[in-house]
Image (cartoon, rainbow, N blue to C red; front, top):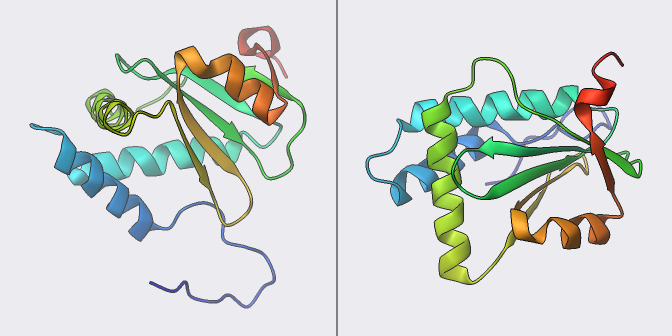
Length: 154
């Protein structure tokens, strides 16, 4: 489906509601019983909003997808070389996060993969990877992680 053009030269920020809904349907089709597609889509939208607020640099969420053994790295379009380890706080549907993690882990196993990389229209990247691959992902992206708690006052 083609994207609507805008009147500004700026690229859209992140994924559209249609793309998030398609991702939610993909998760729900792989997990039984799954959280509702509406809940999964809302969770993905909330995660995207968190990523947009993290514009100071890359952010790694090692515990974002509970029980899956996967980590999530968000790299803004303007990528500095130091990232931050962080925990997600707020009202995010934990059941939807577990379902997303289970669906992605199952796909990794089925496809014999350990990483998924998505690029948004604005050049930002989202990388989901098996925790065992962290060193490889950080080396490939040239990112060095620091503990986010040490910079909580920034």
